[in-house]
View 1: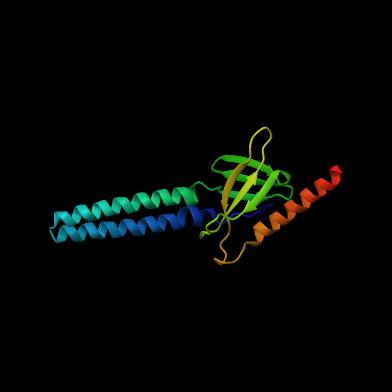
View 2 (view 1 turned 180 degrees about the vertical axis):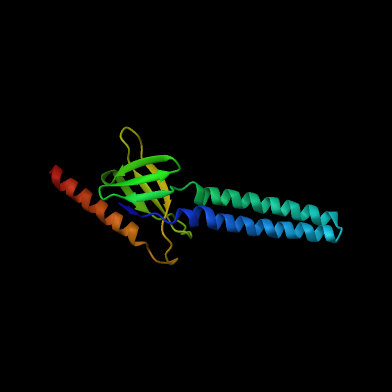
Length: 159
């Protein structure tokens, strides 16, 4: 069993918390400075801007980070996915593709598209360990190679 997802603590707790703290501190300092200067218009402007920045950060982190799978373990014939207290297993033979999103992000993300019996395909997203921005990730390449081998063996086995 090998953990192939990125660090849960760093990606989902430390980085978002640090960014939200910095923007909150800037907003608080701006409000204090506006009160010191006794300009109510400045206070209202900074309160409004701080609220807008906070909402944008919340939705950005929700979409890019918090909706992803917490832990992904490679257990040779299947992947074990853990998000909160829910756990799921995907057989490698049921995976249609593992790809990067259209726009590369940092931390890097991977999208697993897989099929489930009696349902259409599903997608899950997980964060990969940090790598350089323009390089491809060896984890995704290795999984794709293993999936292709499984599909080739399955095709030859059916003939």
